[in-house]
Structure formats: C-alpha cells, structure tokens
Length: 393
Image (cartoon, rainbow, N blue to C red; front, side):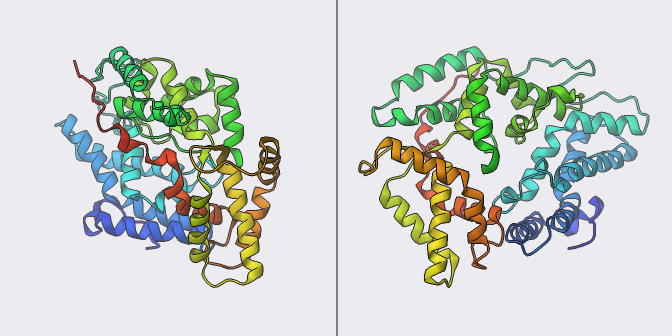
C-alpha cells in the first residue's frame, strides 16, 4: 500500500488489514529492510485511510448533531495533519515503530487523535468559519471543567492504604512498580512510554534529581496536545514524550491529584528492571539464539555480548529472587558501567552479523526487548491488582 488512502475510502479497508500492513512495515523498517522515511510515509498512508479518522468525525457528530459536511471534511484534514506530524518525524519525536510492530496501529492512531480532539475540532470549525461550540472538555479560555468520575483525594488515600496492606517482604523490592500500577489502575491511566535506551538513564537521573520536572513536563504535554503553545525554553521533549499515550483528560486527572502520582508513574516506567534469576537469563539467552537463526561460533560469541549489554543496560544489579551473585557489588557495578558505555557498539556488532535479530542496533535491541518480556517482573504486576476497587462518588 504505497499511495495515500483518503478517509472516505476507509470502508474498503478493514481495521485488521490496516493493522497487519502497518505491523509488516514497522518490522521491515526496524529490521533495516525498508528506509525509515519511506516506511513512515507508507504507514501514514495507511493510517489516514483507517477507521481512526472516521472515529473522530463520528465523535464530533455525536456531540454536535448539526455538524455540516464541510466541518466533517475539515476534521478529516486536521486529523491527517496531526498524524503526519507524529508519524513522519524521524528525529526521535515520532511514534516509536516498535510500538506499531506489536500493537494495533489503528488503536494507537485513534488514541493519539482523541488526545488532541480539542485542537482538531476547534481548528476544523475555524477553517470553515462556523460558530460551533468546542465539544471537548477544555474551554476556549484554556480552563478545565471538573468532571472526573473519581474523587481524587479519596482514591489516593485508598490506594496508599491498600498498598501498605499488600506489601509482602519479598515484594518490597517491587514497591515502586507496584505503587505505580495501583495508581494507574485506580485512575484508569496507561503506562508511560519507556524512553529509548540511549537516553533512558539521563531521563531517569533528571526524574530523581528534580522531583518537580515530571509534573512540569506533564503540564507541558497537556498544553501541547490541546493546541496551546509551549515556550521552547520550557519544553523538555524527552520528559514530555513519556506521556504520549495520555489523553488530555488523563493528564488532567493525574495532575489534579496528589503530586506523587506523576512522579511514581514516571519513575516506574523509566527505572531499571530488577535483575532476573540466572536460570531466567539462561532461558532468555536460549530464546535469543533460536531467534537469531543459523549462526557460527563467532556469531554466537558476539550475540552473547549484545545480550549482556542489553541485560546491563535495562536491569539493575539487584535481584528479586534467585541465588546470590558470585561477584561483589562493586564488581557488578563496574561491569554494568562498562557495558552501558559500550552498549550501542555491541548491539551494532550483533546487527552486522546478518542474523534474524535485525540489521540495526535499534532493531536488535527491540528484538531482545520482546524476547526478554517473560522474565521482567515489573511487566507481570497487573495480575496482582485484580482485588483493588475504587468507590465512585
């Protein structure tokens, strides 16, 4: 699918078809088989012709029953502009292709467009010079109406009490991640987007050094997604991108509560994972070698170095369970520091082998990330929170 699909032809392309095509395109780019700019252009063509754009038109029509055909057309145009900005960017500000390779692309596009609904609708109405009321919750003077279904203060209190009751001795090492999951489930919030490995530790250091930085970034993101200008000197794109999956309502809900919410949720998404037991790392290594396909002894030696670089880059030296490490703490820290310094070179070396792991350093990292998921404790916490309930007023 190489030509732009106009939204009024979307009925001929099912959501599953669009998702399948975008997944293949994202994989091709990540594996180095398709140029990133070309791949993103083709992905944009798919998404502008997807049901995500139709959903925005329908959302407006449900809220403004007198909406004219010209406004609907203008909304389609504004949706395409918004998608173009996010999909075509190749400077790190664009949508991460690894997300589109593993999740519904149309689902992402719909959430992304809805996060800017106020901006899209107001621009569309202005474009056709109609005097319509902005249907979004943010008014034209930039103030928010209070309509959250949750009593934020009560939810925070209930969450903290519940967490105190459910902190087992073994689970104390997961306290930060468990707290973030509890808050997200209570407020019905998505995870933050984990930063690219090349900047994650820098972002994490900033979060730890400046507790207010994450709230400031969330406020900047709220302004950005609702079409309010953000001063360049106040922008922090690395921190703002943590909240790319958050709608304006979700950002407002989080920012309206206890100041710890944004900090805990962001830290949990950026922090090192707890190191798996050695048997889990061994099983992970086996999965990687199998995924690599046919390899030589020399290839496998290089891949093992890339695996070690991934482990040392993404995981702390602290384990949740498993036998104690044979090296001293200082030796482990020294080893971790060396691998973190040379991680990109080691991943690039693995990428140069022409295996099925990928043809670029980012592609290899992405594949390792997929294969590591079963051993990452933090990714499996949600199942422990099924017994948490909040009371709506």
